[in-house]
Length: 476
Image (cartoon, rainbow, N blue to C red):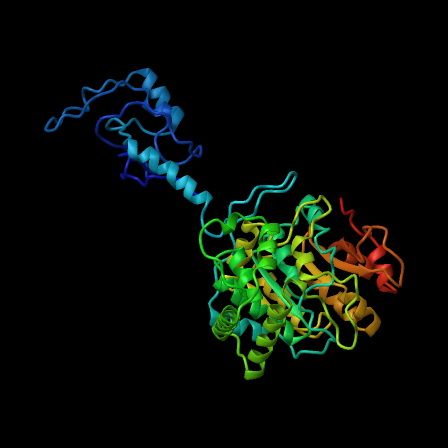
């Protein structure tokens, strides 16, 4: 970005004539002060261009130029600065220096570039997200990318992968940043998005219900002021007022939620807010769709932080985490890493949501259209897929005989040498994975997308266990 400020002839009285006319300016020079840092080679006079002896311009004196001395020292300095000798002394108004510093600070804290402390060894945060798209364009995009929905035997309101944060440190170490993110399932995607900082994200699932649940989350991001407000609306609690909530650690927010029951009024207000935002999403919704969104929201309100993953016809397993567990979970370095653990992470995801850059899509990963269409859109945008979170969907594709079509689609996705696949593995009946962490039923794994494509080209995988044991990246 060009920080050539102030513009020619404004503020400092200095302008660089890029057509060869030299430096222009007038007036008295203020007392010397420490200059604001500026980029070398940008517009404006340099220190070397001010080494000539000072001459004052008197009104009504047309011969002031003739009396200005121009010795050899001036000519050498002018050549070094690559400008012509000035026709008048340089004037730097004190306000100009302050203004340049203010502009530099404003650029650092610009919207879409949230301030966030870098973790040790982590690459710099990438540039701001892409420009927003409006609601009508979002609706068109969802319809264009989606394919007819399918069936899966769970509402999948929250994840059953308690290990979901165990790959965060490796994502940092491998420099997985920016680009386009693709993922499946509910809100565990937001924690990966918060860490990777993509410019756009696609949440694809075979169930249309997942799209409707994503619209519920989108509505919460639209209405919430901060993490406390988001969680209060999600669980039907009274929205807290006052300052300071954004600075509270997630442990304090969870303790507050445990101590604050939902009321009839707060639950009704939360339901009304979510449905109102869903209607404004730009995505065509039927009465049944709105009823499904309300049913999902009621499940969060009724169960609160004790909500667990459930499946049709199968009782919840004791090792399934609660919503409370997922909020408080830590990565392998012992750091809390949920998108709701830190305000900066929450605000990054909120910004993407408000820009309509988290796009819910209905589609089978091995289907004929959706995933391939997402890849084509990412390519047209000049992006590459930085991370693809598949959970354990590949297990079902291998057992269902559709894995080869899925693998061909993945091979066609735009990628680079840092692109990764994030997957989960439950080894309860098939044997623990070498990277399994004691006390966790699930294991979160990373594989380079290039390695996956090469394995498929060399013959593929005979089972999901073979897939997860082939070329996993080290977690630390």
